[in-house]
Image 1 (cartoon, rainbow, N blue to C red):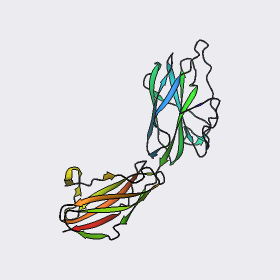
Image 2: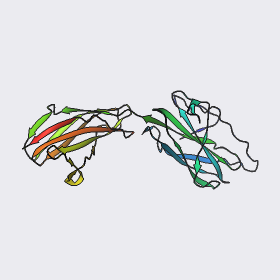
Image 3: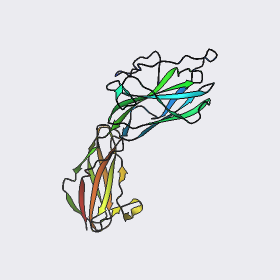
Length: 258
């Protein structure tokens, strides 16, 4: 998505581009460059607190000279500055894959210091000094809060079942930015090994299972497992949110299979 100069709020909850100024352009070039953002590909992506690489493309009939990137805190409307503080508008230089070419990719890596609601903006300039007439931007969130998972049924911590019985578990999962999956891990209590893809047993493996409302801040879930081997088994349940954060508590139920 893009917004036009002169700068105006683009949504309710407004993003303002204050402090932006163009470089005088050469009179014989009147075509502005065009920049786009390809990563994040969508608005409102959610990431964990890690190094984030923003990417995109830029084109111009006479060649792209530079792409600048600015990052805004959507709550305070302040801009990220080189000293790590937030204040007046500042634009960083992105790395171009083909400087001066009519078409180039660009990238810029930024590590957020804390969770929050942010916006990234890109500004291309050509060799004549023309800035991009439309400034592409993306909203995104940085999340450090892991989801929470609960098992509703069975209520008993230990259940005894016959061999080849299919057992079902259900429950809830919540997260401030949305739950993507539940995670299931099954352990043979006697050997300490975990069920892996293909029915083998070894080191722990978490299997992703669907939730009722993927991406919702609160959802129910149901999962089932055929207990085809005699013994005592532990089924642990976790959840994963949109940022890839995992519930550290992983509640469980134990099954004695006879």
